[in-house]
Length: 392
Image (cartoon, rainbow, N blue to C red; front, side):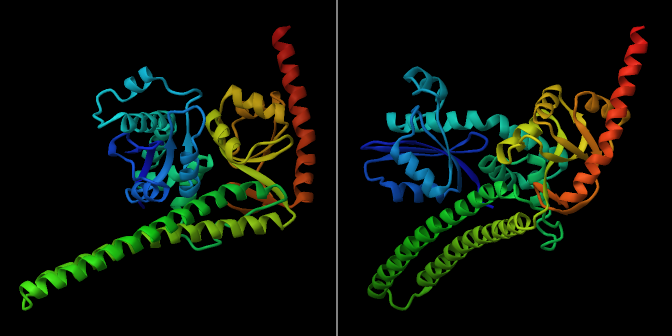
């Protein structure tokens, strides 16, 4: 996979741009009066895949809006225009040729600073799972869609398994997952189009150079074809490199198309949708809520309910959710959840699963809920009696 980039753009008569990596290292600084939109995008995309574009303006400039639309990048901007003193502080220690490059660099570094907490969480998660090799794939998916880090890692880590092995689950609410997958697919398609156009330009230049060299060599030394052969090899390597990049993007697009197809099957199945969570931790719920919002009365399939936060429990109580626990919680945790007014049921009746959803028959799920409703009520009464005994 290609390196993930964060770009900063300073629009104007003279356009400046800066490219940095996800570690904040500056890869490229440039400014020119000849940089129109297409050339600007091609120059940036040739360095890698554009994850985000930063601006120093509180309102997104038209050029940046168009560049983001063409690349599928996320736009990051400050609440208000960055002041000169702020840009001086952000770019301290970096050499720039002019104010255009300095403003572009400030925009890129500001965007990196905004993304850094999320990038650090991704790195720590991948380190704990021993999958740092998947940083770029997981980061692109999480940043662009807001999906859960561990769920995204699990999905990407299982890409080598047979299609359909993980199953797919859907219901009437499952289409909410479609926009995220469509976003990644469109992003990959846009970038592929840019790469193809740039590849064609490069090939045209190589072809023209070949013609010129042949002419010069023909006049100077028609009996020495070594340089021509070397140019042909270089041309072949260039074509191979560009094709490898394009092929990788096409594989990503196919994976996204497969996901969309699975989500479509879930949506038409008529089963009850169950949103999946790794835990009840604050970060987990916050990230899940960005991609597939937790709504009132939802049913959640939770891998490990032992991990939770008081803030999360308060949020889930307000939503009136029902939890299907994959791992049976300890008596203490189950009692805590029950006393918080959250229904906890041992997971059963699951028909299909995908990355973010599980599906269960509606009637079966309702029967399971009714069966556990009485038991939960008894637990609350018993808990109340125990508390009264302690007080007395």
